[in-house]
Length: 358
Image 1 (cartoon, helix red, strand yellow):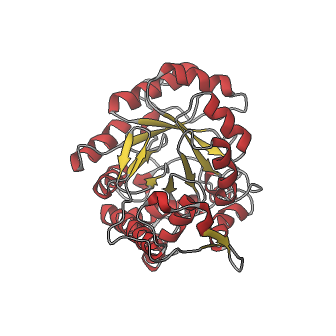
Image 2 (image 1 turned 120 degrees about the vertical axis):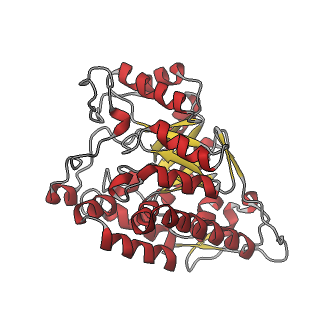
Image 3 (image 1 turned 90 degrees about the vertical axis):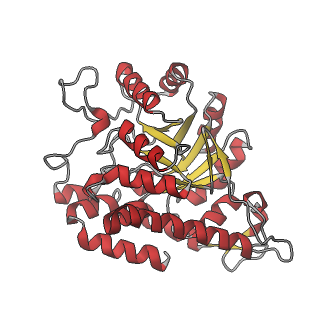
């Protein structure tokens, strides 16, 4: 972790309610995967090329429903208003200012229409994607999709690695099972079958299937990315079903504590997708060199989760801007050191195991 991100993390830990800090920092079981997501990057090294670079690097990237200034996406995380009073609107402004895509969480404490409005007040061309959990009741899923469409979201990111909630021991120990009074998952208000004016829970179901994803694909023209894919066979199925992108993710170690690090699963998924749709990586990215390693390993872009919440808690919108500016600057620096003119120059031969040979 860089000095800037480490300082923001430490400040966030000081100011956050301990139960919410544990909610953000913690994971499932013994939290082995939380730690492994970062350690896996430490086992990899860049093998630069020389005498082939440029004084200006092209970091822009085309993604489903978006063109971004760099291959970095703000990953979906919940409850931003517990980190800072301005919550998701501060995050949206910071992402828009940096020119990166924001994936606003389904469990956001600010409704999606307010998030997109905040982003586009900063930049009229800002891209906001909506994270979606498929609901066991199809009419609830459709209502959420329509809200995202009406708000102007340019893609849906469907999280599929949560048939049940992960066993997060810190949350169980702290009794963090409900939001404090005055806060709610605002996107879940006034949904079919729920109380008038009230919110519904995000429902998990192990019975959801590829058929449910196919129904979603039929109900919207928005691009659909599938988040939470680790097995290459699932990546192939997703592409065959017509998804517009795949996100390699283990939910930040918050679901199953016995899965591989995200970056270790990336090459297999990228090979299965074979360039047919973009592949994103989510989990453990803490440095600009991590971004470069992920792209060289087959990713089109990476998602940043916890560091955004650290920045938000430490210094609101300005803190999130510092997180994104730091990572983007470090990434551009890594490109220069690798002899790369742009993202496409980061190829698999530039990544080796530490202590290994080409």
